[in-house]
Length: 270
Length: 265
Image (cartoon, rainbow over all chains, first blue to last red; front, side, top):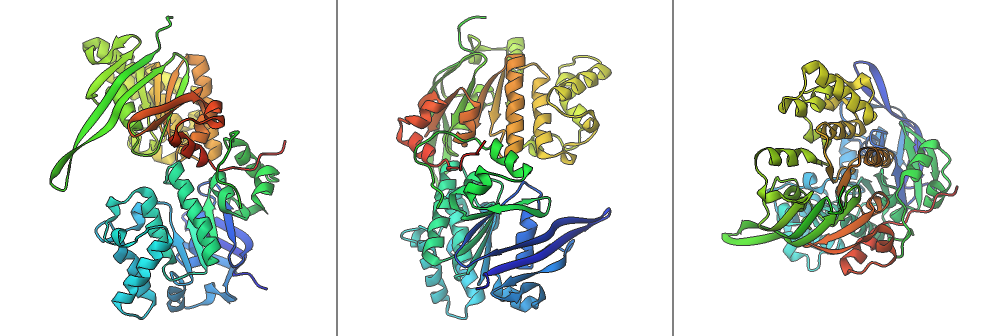
């Protein structure tokens, strides 16, 4: 059975005055339906570029030089913009690091979730509102009515990130791309959002491709980890393999630098 | 040397007036904090955003006036310091922030940034100051090649080293690190932590390290104080905190630390 997302020989370059800079070189990997895959790498290694390339949202200075990105069997790189617009938000969604920047500060958050539904579904405003409310309930706002009418500044960082997740999930995408979704949150909130991601994956059968430089965050949710270094994938395996017996010097350095503590409890890897 | 702790804080509180929806309400950012920091030790202050960590740091650095309570630095009541004694205190306590890109002037070169504190105090001739700045940059592991670069041309790790070099220029005794590791990749965090550890041994520095990252702090600090709603609810050696957390909030913080598979040797 083919994977949900199949990336093959992908190469992406940024054009600069000094010539092309390769943000991705010969990337080949896949994500199966319902699978949580972690993408580990340092800042600047090409993680975000890869996620944007999957969505067809690369900035004008970047271009896909070769390769294919197959989603549900069709190559997204060859589809017209109108089809990509239907895919984005409805079939593949993305959440970014900073929820404060992702939300419009002067609009109520419920309307911002309903807006996503309206963009993809031809239905009445009332039904869009109902869909938004039920998605807000799914990400843990119970009852969702109160948060629907709140402004972003009235919410905590963790609540804002859950609203952003509700936006992403409102149209039931099969694949969620997450770019450092917990990097701007403090540790207890981070654990809350990671726990939510894991439960959404289990309940909705959602596939997640999560980019992070944080071993801890990836170990908490990912079944498989891809390690990216300078635009290439250098290693892949379960968290236990990649963090416990790293093969590449970069991964080894990362794992060595991670502050491990003797503890009880903690977020357990799946 | 004496046995008096470098910092002794008693009953510190800080109330902010806040107007919410037409009504005025007060927020107690600090609600009676007691904290001592012994000379040459590293104490971490760990808590969630909004727990009062940064307010405590600003009060200790003299940037914020406490509502009640007392701060003694090296035995002297900070509130009573005036003139030269106050200036000396401000040199002895230096703050280091999370976002070095925002904390450093984008217009100055690396050496100008490090020598500016001396210039402000009228110490040394320009050539001497530059020489001293280069020495300090070497101390923090910055190559001389970056001497004339500006902050935005440096990497995050280099910028944080530069901020450390600047803080060291006035020979402080206490460095307050306010989320100074956040935003750096793990290996860079470890490098900066190693550098701070070395400086502590070499210069006899004392650190108060503020963070929400209990895991990082537990390997960096001698002792961890847990802050919750404007109070310190627990203080213990890091290992003890993990094996037997007492306060419910400490347990929540410990539970939030992700389990990462151990590295096989």
